[in-house]
Length: 207
Image (cartoon, rainbow, N blue to C red; front, side, top):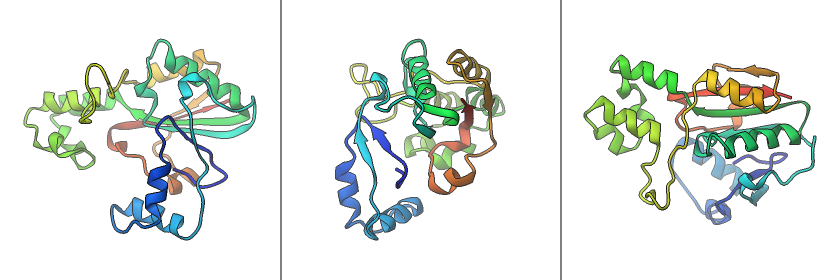
């Protein structure tokens, strides 16, 4: 989550987590940094909303929209195109949509080179304990390792994008300037802890 002037949106209510941060200690380095800011009195503007129903903002009111490890969980034929169109609507002229998402080209390159273990440091124990490279490939591509993920309650990936597929998605939404930076970088690079970046791409689309 980001601190103001950012507005955070999730369909899952994270307010209980924010309350717990006030008495939390320890954990990963990124969490310790976040908790210290909460405990120092900084606030987080968090709103519960399902962005598949559109973005709850007027047109041309946002400078930057950040969607980390999210677009792959949307239906690529209906929900993902609608989401990026909504982002373009809400962005001011010159505003930037920045996303991170698993990169299928990179993942397949590492698979063919028998290097799937290079991604293990960011993955759960089930990934680290898998022996077959093809098992690890499936875990990354489907991303449905959560204990609550079932056929009836699917929590995995609906699509894995390569750069050409991402270009097509964004160009159809009306974005003209599209870039693939090497890292998140800049102000966001200092604010964001985005898990899974070892096998992901960063994409920026300018309105």
